[in-house]
Image 1 (cartoon, rainbow, N blue to C red):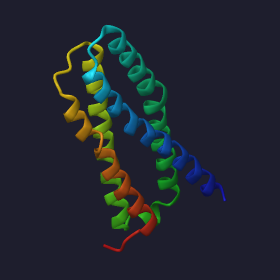
Image 2 (tube, rainbow, N blue to C red):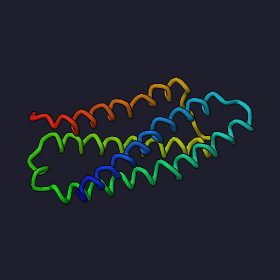
Image 3 (cartoon, rainbow, N blue to C red):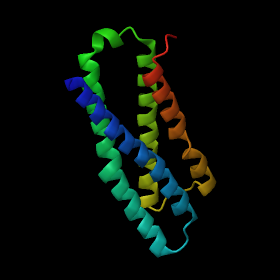
Length: 143
């Protein structure tokens, strides 16, 4: 029964993490389009708060609960290819988050050189990971 609580907490924080991963790049789109100083400063504040207040804590808590679940079910997961593919997706998702952090710093320092169009495409990446992770975790395919 305890593992079900861990899974619930893992999913709750994963949802919050993905919400932040979907919203932060969307803020980058609007920030890249902004021309007046009031809007630019507002986007800097929104991006910082989203990054530090939601993205970082939710990603870390997702990781903590995921590792906890893994430690309790390691004997089954070690030989499950779906788990290793899911883990690869998660590692790539953390790399994506690192890119978001870098882009946020560039915006904060007024050094962004990327277009709103770039960020529109960049904003679609987490959806690909979400689809892959959900299908792997739910279907547990025997690849």
